[in-house]
Structure formats: structure tokens, C-alpha cells
Amino acid sequence: MSNGPKNPVGDTSWFVRDRFGLFIHWGIYALPARHEWVKSQEKIRDEDYQKYFDHFCPDLYDPRVWAQEAKNAGMKYFVVTSKHHDGFCLWDSALTDYKATKTPWGKDLLHPMTEAFRAEGLKVGFYHSLIDWHHPEFPVDGLHPMRDDEAFREAQKNRDIRKYAGYLHGQARELLTQFGKLDIMWFDYSYSDRDWGWAKGKGKADWQSEKLLTMVRDLQPGIIVNDRLEIGGDIKTPEQYQPKSGLTVDGKPVVWEACQTLSGSWGYHRDESSWKSTEMLIRMLIDTVSKDGNLLLNVGPNARGEMDSRALERLRGMGAWMRLHSRSIYGCGASDFTPPPDCRFTQNGNRLYLHLFAWPFKHVHLEGLAGQVEYAQLLNDASEVKTSVVDPHQQAQNTTMGGQAGTLTLELPILKPAVAVPVIELFLKA
Image 1 (cartoon, rainbow, N blue to C red):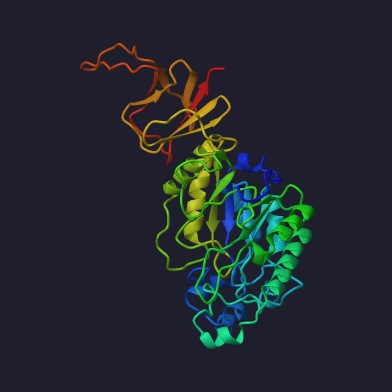
Image 2: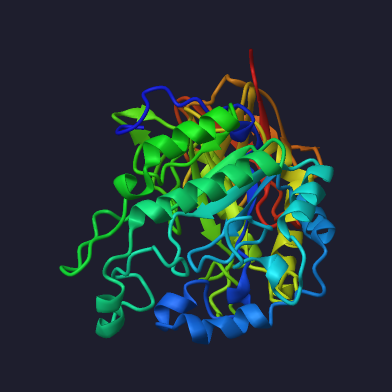
């Protein structure tokens, strides 16, 4: 990226082909069930947050079910929070007791998860927080839960970020050496631009990012690393918004991934109500691929270890659509052709896919495609879509359509196919 290595070394060839991944945010914040940032947002002291650790026992946890649901949804890779900002670890780290094996559950959660997803053919990635509000050497700053307790800040003013960096690197080494081949390392996040007057945000100098990235590359050659270490990376990661167009750095297109939630929270949030519809999520996936991006869609399992019924409904709805339309997603990217209003194009070689967000009456007109299409069909059932090129000199009159230079006209059925977003597959002439 612009402020990092000029030639990213992660292998993104599979990434831009697979296009669709599952994000999993899971930890003891599933017990309060009101946002993964609950410790910071509600300024909860360690001793009060401890009750969630002491009662964490996900007795219904079966990662094979998670993996099957992800595969059935059409996802090709997953990224899970090995540790979020509260410092709780899903694996049996030798560097802390703040981990799943010390809770009432008493077992490693991460090894069986990676094994289950690999068994379903998905690639594996870890999200690892650069922040740690539980660690005794992580400095108190404006995001820390104890930020407003001036007596605590004064008592802890000599915390040493260099000692914490050693812990951060040590845990990263465990993840990179104990779980076999990893495909993605997703660090989160840097905020050196923040300044509260009495404290500053953290960034590449605090994380010792260059050293950390070198270790990652050495231990896992070809692994994809995201862009949140402040030194660039292999992929850019816009969060909670859909970019207007494909992302560029210095005017050149870069590999990118939109990370999005099903609702307004990453972790399990019992009472959060702004859940996106299945149709909206399908449109987001299409929109992302049409701009040469990937979609990493998040699920926050509950404290018993199950995916929320609302999440399952959406994943299964996306899976039903993907079963019929996945070839308009996998291996596809942006097209040089301009789609009509309320539509998106994706393209894979000589196959051009028209995604219709709004179903028009009888006709859709594709500018610039006259003479370039040999055949067209609805993708859901492979039924023919008739095509024509109207004489550009023909005048519109009564039931006669006016001509449009260089435009291919598709004749559609009146009734929309019974799918969330219909897709027309256009076979381009060689």
C-alpha cells in the first residue's frame, strides 16, 4: 500500500476468486450480549467484567455446525477473533491465564474450529486485536475502560507499551506456529491519529509493526495480511460502508474486502434490532464483487456457542441464492461495461452477469453491447432471454420501440423469477 511495502507478498490469487467469507466475533462479551465493545462503552472495571469470564461455558458449541452453515451459505473462507480488545483468548495461550481453558468451559475453542472449517474446504484466518484492555502493561488511553478514573490513571501511568508489544508478538507467534497453514492474518487496529491531550492513540511504533509483519511473513509465507498495522498490507479493509467504486492507492487498483455485520454489532447483541434483510445482504455481496472486492460478512455467536436464529435465517437465504447464482460471484470482478440503472455487472472472462436489483417491465437496454452477445439466459433456471438490436433510425410510435445506437435490448418475462436478485448470464462473442 502507499505507506508500506511496494510489492505485497501475500498470495491473493485465491482470495479474489473466492470473494465471500465469514467473519466471526466471539468471546466472553457474548454474555452481556450488548456489543463487543461493552467493556469500553460502559467503562467496566476488570473486577466487574470478571463475572463474564467466570460464567463462560458454551455448552452447545459445535464448530462443525458453524462450518457447515458457512459452506452452505457459499462462503469460501473464515476469519475468527482469536482475541478481541478485551484481551480474552479463544486458545490455550501459554502467555496468559485469560483464556477459554481457564473458564468453566475449560477447553481450547480455536483448534476444533479451524479443523472443522478446513474439513468443509474453507480457508482459515485469524483476527487478532492489537489492543488489550486486560493486559497490565497496556497503557490507559481514551478508549480504555478506565479512561475516566483519574486515580487509576495516575496509579497506572508507568505502564510500558514495549512490554505489551512483546506479549502481542508472542501471542502472534503462537497463532502462526500452532494451527498449521493460515491463509489470513487480520490485525485490528491502529489509531495513532487520536489525541486526548492526556493520552495519545496507538500505532505502528507501539505495535512494532515492521518487526511483527516480518515475523508473520517468515512463519507463514504467502499469508494475506490486512492493512491495519499502519504499514500497508495485502488488502484494504473498508468497514461498515460500501465504497462508491473499487479502491485505489496512488491511482492504481488494489485488492480489498468490505467487512460488514448482519446487524449493527459485531459481537452477539441480544436486543439490537437493525438487522439487514437477506435481500440487502445479497445486494451488498453483488455490489462488492461488481467493484472488484470481497465481502467478509460477520456473525456473532451467542454465549452457549450457537449462531443466532436471525443470523441463520440470513445465511441460509444467501445460500439459497448462491446455489443458483454463485458463478456470477466466484471468479468474477468488475466489468468495463456500464450497467443500466438499478443493476450491477460482474464478469468472468467472456461471461457477463447482469444483476437486476429492480425488475423492469418487459425490456432492459444494455448500452454498448449491440453485436457483442451470442446468447443470454436467466441464471436461476437457464431459460433463454431473447435479445434484439433495434434499428437506431427507427422512430418510436404506438407499439413500436424507438432505436438506440449500439444498444442490445433484452426481452424479459413479466413476472420476476422467484429469487431475491435475478441474474442474466450473457455469453460474449469471442
